[in-house]
Amino acid sequence: MASRAFAPYYRYVHWRRITSTFGVAFLAWAALIAGCNRGDHPAQVGKAAPDFTVSDGTNTVHLASYRGKTVLLNFWWSQCGPCIQETPGLEALHHDRPDIEIVGVSIDTDADSYRDFLRRYHVDVTTVRDPDQTAAKLFHTEAWPETYVIDKDGIIRRKIVGDPDWFNPEIRTYLRSLAPSTSQGSQGL
Image 1 (cartoon, one colour):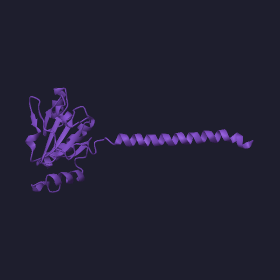
Image 2 (cartoon, rainbow, N blue to C red):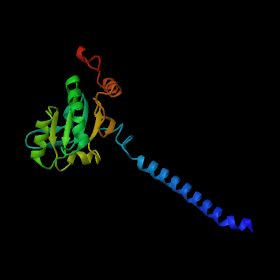
Image 3 (tube, helix red, strand yellow):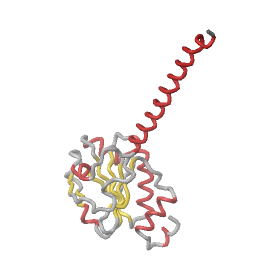
């Protein structure tokens, strides 16, 4: 009789253990699946960057005109927190490594917000406003900011999603491997 008194409790504990194990396994599986398409190894890496020409009435960017140079193609938006955070680093990289072309493509629909951003953050890299996201669609860009590292032959070498630390020595070393600096002032970068 004593074994019957404990049996319902053990059945309940056993069932809870099974459901919690499956719950944890399901959550781990869902996290793994969600992490599979985070842009770490996009289909475009190793392929030619899609060419585009975007003009906003003030500036025009034709990607093919940068052939022969290493390019950081940065898609951004003036209301994007990570875009704001990465701007000083991109500007510093632009000044430290003038041999690397940094091309910004903004998806701002509001021209005033775009111009205010450029003024407020002293942006002097080449940038163009593309409110129809013509270029971003070619690159399948869905997150802001996204930066594509394109080598001198026009091949996409890396896709960086989010706000990287452009001062990071590993990033600087990688960029140096694609575009060795010829100026002595850039030797330590």
